[in-house]
Image 1 (tube, chains in turn green, brown):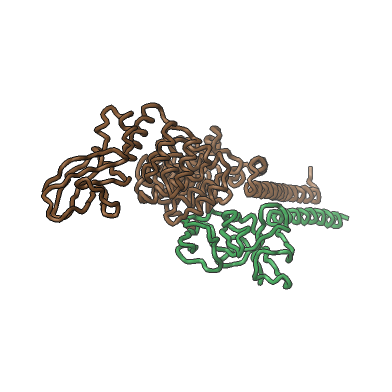
Image 2 (image 1 turned 30 degrees about the vertical axis):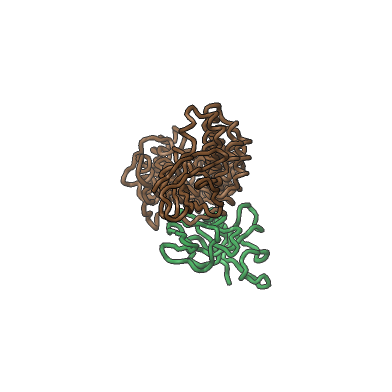
Length: 160
Length: 438
């Protein structure tokens, strides 16, 4: 009987440990919940064909972004349906200048899309941390209308 | 007393399991705290993004409640203008890891800067925020000169948006204080690029286009019209005052042109006397409109400006029409001037203490071989615009033979005449009658 009891005790302890490991795993997993967004209903980027399925890689963070990447981001409400798209023009810490209608980032012209015609010269703007400067075709929901977009609003990089 | 090996093993295992349970419990609790703090910080960011300050504050407090020893959760809940924050942040700076200490020190000094207190800038306060706070200290001491450039910020230690936002606002305020219009323009444009939905976005846009060398009047008008009347008038008066103080950045003509464009955007019923006078003397306004506006306004400055405009365009009738709007002494001076310029001798004799000081006279009559020259003007130099009737030797000289060059009048005479009798009539008054010899 003694060995049987020992096996039972070891089993209950291992079960407890397993349960705790599961709880620990859940706790580790909780803060990095990934978002999944629908792949239709976008109307800002003219080059995205609505008939095609457009995916968004939701694992991408600010640190993964490069100039010219097309990203999806929320606008100003907590609603997955309100999504805008744009090109990454400047990343945190980079300096943006606008002169004679041309935008330059760290003194290199950004040519993926134009800036609004009525936007005057901007001598030097450093993009704050956790933010990204985004430009889109129609400038309705991009950084020219909202300022640098917080990383919190980033949904991911568009998979073309 | 002998120990039961099995019981001992069981106790040991439960003790181990208890320890593991405790560790796992703490880890789980830490995860739960991080999760809810993260959620609250997310809500805080969202509320800030949509401009809901109350909601943002509540979410930040909630985050700080979940993670009280983490600068990332505590800082958003810290009101830098709260006097107690200084002590709290000083204590927090000693408890957080090095990488967070930089942010806590920056937040502490950020609060001191907002409260106008002396900054305590240790070497550890590096990074973008640190550089900006040092820049704030530099701005606070600036009283004259031009706005310094923003410091180069370290690429991998970008500043927080709050410190950057505040610094840009302070740059604008400083440039305004030292009357550096180029600095004001640049600071306004940068602030607007960072925060296009700034509460003063329309004022910033107006400042930016007005002070931009390439800005055109259509843009000034368009941006001014976006503001409601009270804010527009306020912004325009501020801009005019700035432009008047800084005469160097924009050339004089550019500056005056922009001031005129701005005054144009002040509703007529809100223009001060000086503004109305400037409005009248600027641009290519129809004189009748200017006079009508002056009649409506009735203030002395405005009426005088309109009268000056009428004199410039030789519309003495309109100047005379406005004269009754002035006090007695000024009215008399205007009527006298009108009479002088219109050679109204009857009025001159009636109004002037010494009419001869105003009455037209002939100056330097001289006879040549076949023509006679003389100048006609008042003692003060006013030149008559009316026809001058000339008689030579009692004969009327036809109008087409009387040639005028400003005040100089030239009439033909008999060739070789040694002397002639000259009579000059103006407004039915004979102003000269006598003999002129060679």
